[in-house]
Length: 133
Image 1 (cartoon, one colour):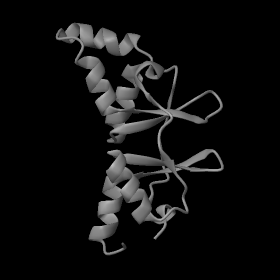
Image 2 (cartoon, one colour):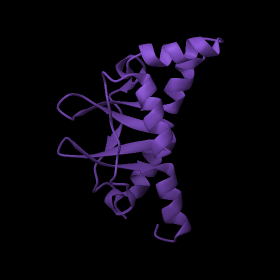
Image 3 (cartoon, helix red, strand yellow):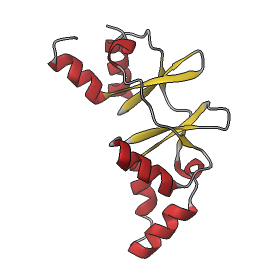
């Protein structure tokens, strides 16, 4: 089975120069734990995850200060640059191994340098549970 067979094709993105507060809102609205970060040309330059946000917020014990931090911090300041990606024609087993060994929760799917989808651990579990894999 190929990654393209089970990946999600509707992928929300966030800009590198957007505020972390906007990323938090999008993460919550979309019920996802990570977003691809794109530059002004729409090319993926990183990923921001809920873990990145939690690490940022852990720097302050004051709840009021946390809100200020979210508003004042740009996505580019806490994102993971150069995220691991996968080709849509890659084998799902290979992608799963890549996620397992790299301790990665999701792989963004790129084709010819364009973001075309995302493959999460949940997508793989769903394929196994549905006997697709």
